[in-house]
Length: 334
Length: 149
Image 1 (cartoon, rainbow over the protein chains, first blue to last red):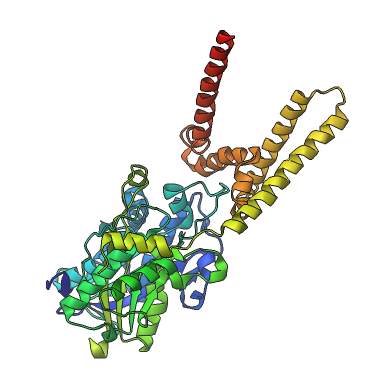
Image 2: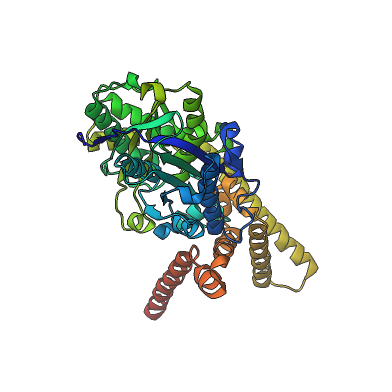
């Protein structure tokens, strides 16, 4: 490890990616890239928790099928979600016959899962890992906020939890996209305490991780085609760019945010999308497609997470943020 | 990089704010409309039951409005009104009905006792507690004033 960055010697490959989203996400601008869209967000289940679990499972099996493999070919499923005790991931692993490692770092779980999966493969311990995350608007609302039918308004800084699940299947070989390096983020708290302003709570963590990554790798922002943050949203992205700017780094041209991309302005989500599924559905659909097609050669994915709970907010704690960076490259620049 | 204090200052300065004019106007219009409907219900009952006094009419009107709030919540419409009207649909008695019915609906998956019954007052509970506590305080003040007379 150099600083906080791991360089993968054997360059684990992205064998396949799969994304499945709810109806609102499918009505957004990224619709053509998703692999599967739900017509109703309950997915034919009795509860939204069960629906999210089915989403998560479908994403994992979708990725395995897309790769032309069977569950027995996958050594480990590294998964996480936002619900208490990560029931979505573990309940979906109950149905799949794959060894399971549960992960949690809020909405940056996808980054964490990718880092652990890539490290296990790079070290030669396993040959394939399914890295999956999910979130569901209706399960997140009831856990973190209010009942769905309560007539409240969203605050101007709030974000809409993405209903969706994504899975990236990593392996020793297969596919033209590789995981080249990764930076493990530190937990950063700049004192934001408004649980409806999570973009501001996470922006410092994202900025610190990106700066650390550039320092450890000796690279410039121009090295990457895109620096993609997870779910900072429109306002959080603005703060993120301001923070980088204050350190003399101008990333405005290269920066994209999954939360900002997934919804249209007309869809009435004040600052865009959020949730553990946000970065994973956008990466596994749009960006993976672009990389496979060769129009994006180097990409730094930085899923961001706000490490709060309902309890910590009520007890007046500020919101710590975390961001993990994973660098992807296509074969010829690997 | 910016320090913590500089960052919080920046956040405070550039964070998107609510459009107060628009919010207040919509709350005023929708809240007023709900109250007008309430007054209409009251007047209709006055015509239907000429012998009823003001107190009885008030009680009937409240019951009807609570029913309407609960029914609209059940049909999944009240939260849409709320998104549009904000405090305009929260403050009237229909909003109180919404705050009781919505958690009851939300938590039905967790069963009748631990879901619906336990969670029904999760939003309205604080309103009831503060209402009861403040009426005790006001009652005590009345009582003391009565003693002094």
